[in-house]
Image (cartoon, rainbow, N blue to C red):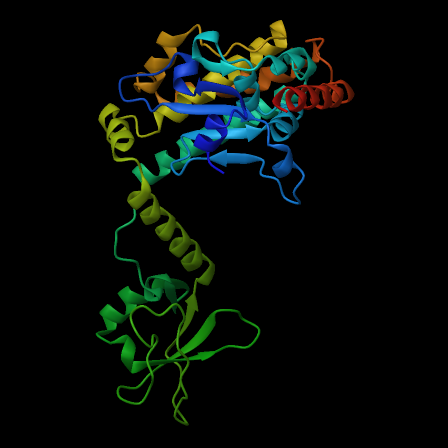
Length: 352
């Protein structure tokens, strides 16, 4: 089953433009995203595993089955609440059965946590890009040797520096593990008789040797394995991001010179503004009244620090706002369930 099948066979009950076009924040390069709701044909609905969501291959078109949509609304999912309150000029089709689901059945104090959670996720993404831009990884991965240190006098020294100072090669060294001291080894030196510290340059572990009788250790070596593992993970994540990143969006980020993903920060503030409005008015306002300001944020006209300070202040204020909002603690689940049954029955009776 595909979105096209749902549309052609008349199972769609809501189809709307979403994202930046619904928020009024679209620019010339904005994508066109379609979101909607469908009712499964009875023969599909009665299967063991009826689908809850159907997308196209690129995921820019996504439809949610009525039951799944309502489940997410009961959780005050921001994306589903936005779909429920889509501006009229963005609605391509809306079936009358959706009149069973007024926003007042769903809006509750859960919005404090769900909108704040989405906003924090956007902040983390912006922070992640900030970190990637300011702490890039060379494409060639570092070696285990770069995370090994030896004892020198009363301190330690990087193994590579110590070997260079001695004029020794790692292949002429040998290691023996010390009991009760994780990742600490006695290091021996004897050209041509030991196995080396690494078996090959790409090795992820140090190598142990059998030591000739009577040979004394030269120094003790510590392999900082945890640090090496974290480095390898971050190196992999960084280069996966490089290969997958949207080149136009990244170029825009680099161009404004702020070194953070301004689009994520724009959505952070949008979400927090919407949460404040829900607490104050009990309504969902999808189309943003402060378009100019939010597009300035997207254009990188503010520093990362001042946007973060603004977001943190809004996050802190959500608790008191919702406590005084008069909104119920939870949506009206029993009424929603009755509405869901009635809506589905009405749709199937009409479809027969």
